[in-house]
Amino acid sequence: MYQELTPKNSTSKPVSKAVINRLPRYYRYLRDLLSKDILRISSEELSSLMNVTASQIRQDLNCFGGFGQQGYGYNVKYLYGKISDILGANEGYRAVIIGAGNLGRALATSSTFPNRGVFVKAMFDIHPDIVGTEIAGLHVYDISELQKYVENSVVDIAVLVVPNSQAKKVADLVFSLGIKGIWNFTGYELHSVGNIAVQNVHMGDLLMTLCYQVRSLNLPESERKSEETEE
Amino acid sequence: MYQELTPKNSTSKPVSKAVINRLPRYYRYLRDLLSKDILRISSEELSSLMNVTASQIRQDLNCFGGFGQQGYGYNVKYLYGKISDILGANEGYRAVIIGAGNLGRALATSSTFPNRGVFVKAMFDIHPDIVGTEIAGLHVYDISELQKYVENSVVDIAVLVVPNSQAKKVADLVFSLGIKGIWNFTGYELHSVGNIAVQNVHMGDLLMTLCYQVRSLNLPESERKSEETEE
DNA sequence: TAGATTGTTAATCGATTAACAATC
DNA sequence: TAGATTGTTAATCGATTAACAATC
Image (cartoon, rainbow over all chains, first blue to last red; front, top):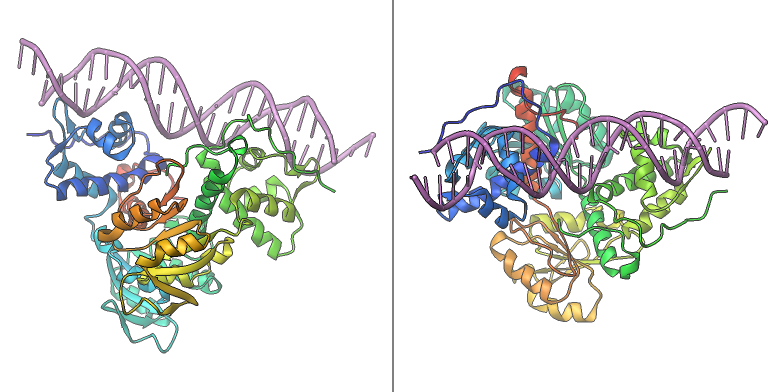
């Protein structure tokens, strides 16, 4: 009914960061289509849904192989599966959340992780009154138990939601334990050295780009320097 | 000691999104330098701190005017002030947080807003047991009071942290009240139409790009398609 | 077969880097 | 003045869009 995955050969060019950043958005839209029992979609239809060009969609997908069929379009379920595979949503990655403050709790409670196929297994903190409790069904361990925990369980991702003052110390610990993925919400910017994946999230940076846009709206037309505010 | 701001004339090209997204990072680094009492910095020095090219720094800054001085470099305090101005950090923008769930509370409590010069003035929710309480010193109003609140107080930014099921309804309300900036954390993607600034944050999208990177690390060298994982 | 739509190449556009003249 | 470093132009690189032949 539709062609088999024809993986690009391994000597092909690396995929750009720009493309990879767009993949989760395809993932979301495809899941939405799936939930509406839409079985097929053309790049043209998807492009109007997502506000991007059909050409970009086809280019993006073809970085990873031919997922569509001429004259038909894309099978939504098949494409969703392929993108899930590319993003590792079917790998069952396991995460721990380090820091049981407000943001740590919010993340632990949210559907962010299950929605993307990541399992949160435990939380860690230093406060004696929090350690030993449960948050969203997760046991909160003392940070001193992290090493033992990592030795006994697979931990693919550490989520850093500790105060800035603790960030460097905790990051060094996480590095030393060989955890390969770090989702860093602290203000202390981490650099990915060696065989490690780091994703720094500065919420304030995002807020400020919004402020810039708001300011641009308020400026008289003649003083505007920004492009369209569309995200 | 250093030259006055020479604003580019208003017919100059619009500033690209790429540049604007980098401005908050300059803001952070400059503030950090300031806190360390570093008075001047060259693009070369800053570039090695930030892991970008000196050329890019100079190009970025020159989109907004000549902030440096030949032979000297940049006055940190002056440059910080200029970037603050560009980003609207000195505008004293006022925000309300809509949704007093875990993420709403986390944002209300965090230093994200004060760190970037934004004032959170109030929270809104629908749950009777939360409405009327205080969170992080902020009164929680019933969402039905939003209109009256907006009519009596300046609200530049609405932070949307409500369940997905409520997102569209609340977004429509916020639009109708004329609030110009929306920081949207719901899964319901908003499009900026007309004179409105929207910033959609999909935490899960960020998580998935991290998963992609982790997966790339685990893949045998021959199957890798990604570029460097550096954020 | 005819129509539709992909996969892919080529053209365009934009962003980054390099280089250097201007100048503090 | 000599040295340093910006501001800015030109060159390079990469990403997006357009176009169309391949093909389902």
